[in-house]
Image (cartoon, rainbow, N blue to C red; front, side, top):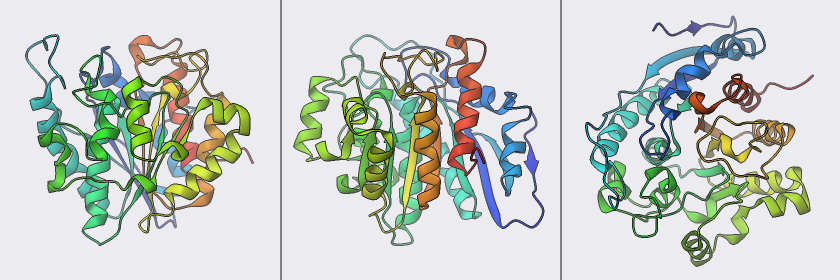
Length: 320
């Protein structure tokens, strides 16, 4: 496959697209196909790269990170599953993202399942740490993803990345980039949760993070606008800005069926766009990631195309 490099005349804004086609961190196959599907999708009559260029960015597609694939099937009781291969893949993720950031490009990361966030955020945080800048994180997701190997009911790594970033989990994975934790909980905010395990609820409260979690009940009561404004305010307190990771299962499955971890009662199409429009308006975002797009489970490509539309909102596209 050849990847697009699109220039927009007179711009000094640069976007670096990178795919992280790791899908074996999830229980369902297919999310490893998400990055390619988003790239190839016809989004409002054009490709993702061409639409990003229309927003005033110079766009370079760095291709896909090399993923080390297991040659065996994990056994029940293995937790986290495929740890050796995941850590090897994470090293490649770090190298690629640091190249993008070192080139002065804004990373747009196409997943892959959500286990990749442990490596993508670690790489971005490590890059800014070397410049003595601490960054925050906005996590948009139906799930907390804050399990550890000891608490996970499935052993799947995509339920653990937020715990890893915060310094909880297996030693070899929490020490990615040579230090732990990667994130101060006071700069971390989570939006859209509606399916949490009991152990995750306990960990959230033990970390003093309840006020940083804007659940679907909070969104129902207060509205997306108020919740997102407060979430951005929390993450933006980090002196170096903040990363954003967006799991498509935050959206109601009637609108985004192409994901392996669907839960009823998610946010609407417009609420998803509003959240990302607000993030762009506020400024300070250092990377954007979208994950858990599973073309094998999609219907008429609507989730794939929606993922592309959401990336454009995060980069500044508005209705008018």
